[in-house]
Amino acid sequence: MSQYLDSLDDLRDGLDTFVEKWANIQRKSVKSIQAVTNTIMQIEHLDGSLGKLEGFQDLRENTKGILLVNLYDRLVPALESSIREFTKLMHMFENLKHTASSIQTLTETMRGNVEDNPRLEDLVGFLDLVMISVRDILNMYESEFLVKVTIFRDFEEGAIEIGVVSNYLTIWVVEPNIEPNARDKLLKDLDEHIELLRDVFEGDSSIRIPDAYRKAPL
Image 1 (tube, one colour):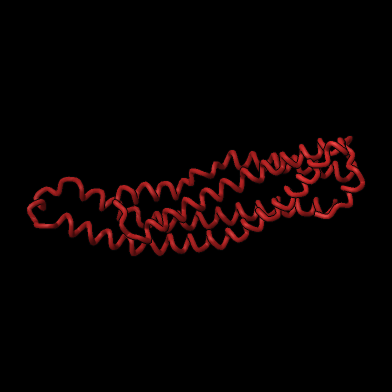
Image 2 (cartoon, helix red, strand yellow):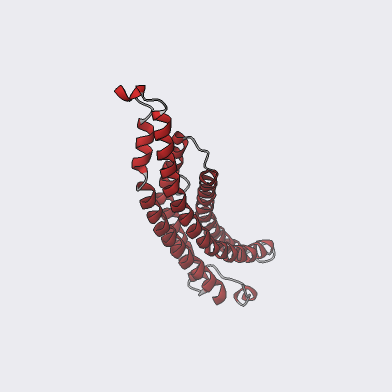
């Protein structure tokens, strides 16, 4: 089962690389967004009193129009650049999903043979725990990517109320689908379960794998 362990190690390393690359793209993206927050504040202040300037015809509307053009001219390219980087990163995400799917397929094969080989039951249980952690982590990022794509597409259309713009950018920055503490706990659990599996595969555990599965390719 060395191939199996190698695939698990590749999956674990890949998750670390993916998470790190995502964080780097997000940091750059947030800096780009922060560069236009002053424009958003200026637009929002236009809804307040203009004092003696209230008498100037269409001043509020004209000023808001100029600021909105400035906002979209700077914000849309910044978000477009970020989405392009996130989209490229999602190719790596698909590779991780493919590896996870291959491991899941072997797990299901083992599960189907538990009745004939009861010794497989504990092993399948460990594999289930690994796949739960992997699936939960991947789901976080897939959901967040879909949110970002939706926000960007709305900005591309260019017909968003300024209040919605502010809310969208807040969602983009805080990434509600990614909870760092939960993710880190899942990664820690994943490490522990992979080590348990390594002990099983290497014979350093009370769990014994039938020889047919020790030689099975992934």
